[in-house]
Length: 287
Image (cartoon, rainbow, N blue to C red; front, top):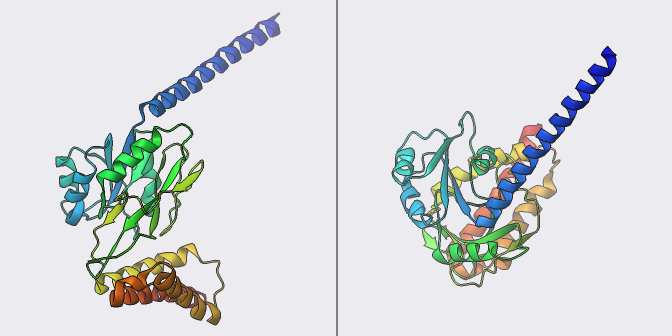
């Protein structure tokens, strides 16, 4: 008799526990479906001492549904600028991080909207790009991620021609993970497409001047981070010769830097030099 009562009690407890869990899951699904119906986009900006261009960047994204600033403990006026603009501000501990990628997933998950546009603190969003994104998510069965063309500068001169610099910056929030390595690409759950770079002004505008001194400083810092991502590579003399040459050739001829005259040539040489430094540092780490 006692065992029967215990068994019945366990059955009732299990039944109600299952129904409670099922109801909770259904509620989450309804909330997510409702968010998807609202067709909202959150802009996510990772920052660290980013006061130089931040106000201009925020002005360019003010018409989105939400702007999230994920700050890595800035010591300048970055947070104050974001507060004045009414942004949602979250903090990611800087620690020993020398690149922004470790904070990307945390920043994305801090957004409330089902769609996220990731913008760097030195990039502008054009009105044409904003309109394109909202039109995109209004389509049935639209792609879950978009590569966006970016217009760059070198030696503080705008590059000519159609941009070949594509950045995967727009995607659904749910399930997207950004690997914590320099120059990594977000992993999006679903099909991804490229925006046609011939569309008028549908692009990100990169404000970084990219003077040579800046490029060399970034090259040293970024290539050190690249070593962590490519430790398993066994590069030798062939890679030291081929990889820099191929990147120069691709940049100068295939990506059209030849149209930019002497600055395009220098930029392509720097692109090759970046690859040379990655390979050299990997070889150095194994000696």
